Length: 253
Image 1 (tube, helix red, strand yellow):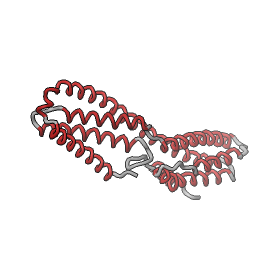
Image 2 (tube, rainbow, N blue to C red; image 1 turned 90 degrees about the horizontal axis):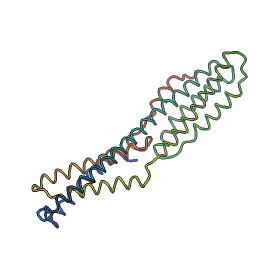
Image 3 (cartoon, rainbow, N blue to C red; image 1 turned 90 degrees about the vertical axis):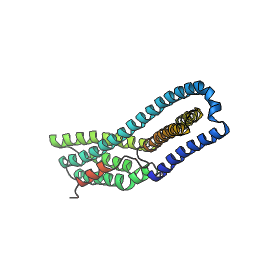
Image 4 (cartoon, rainbow, N blue to C red; image 1 turned 45 degrees about the vertical axis):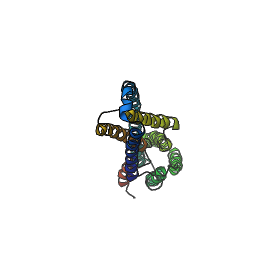
């Protein structure tokens, strides 16, 4: 699992590498000899920079939207299992006790087992088995009053929602950007930085500040995408706070 310290090291290495490349380029191809090509290099840098900025901005927006959707889906899943626990109060025995015990087990399995598994990139399975057991318990009920009928129908509806949210969470836990997109992002960033290094400025310090700024922005953006594009893995990930809150609302009777 990547840590914030590793992220800082990667950003520092990218910026330092860009500056060293600029220094080496200036030594083997002096800026005064490149100045005649500034019009061409400046045009290339403008086109590359604009194109790459659009790609980078779109990717950041996409991964952040996906991260927000994963967070919202977790809230819906936690609310669904809490609703099932409460709806069980309107059911007769033994379904009431069975559903409430299974709901508590579901929440505990998600917190204790599945969240660490998702952080390690392992697809969790325990909650799916518990969901099936809750379906069996709810379907085995023989409703004898309007209250029990309503409780059973509502519980089945929430079980359907719970299964849907659980499947979405597991799919999101294994999602990652395709290698082709990473290739576009990395190659585009490298070409943009190289173009900035090729541009010849009269002041080496000004050119160094330019290269430093571009390489810092590019590396930070790529790190942000890498940290966010997997919602349940890495230093920035969706937490299990919703399930912890629900767990506190399920006292053992």
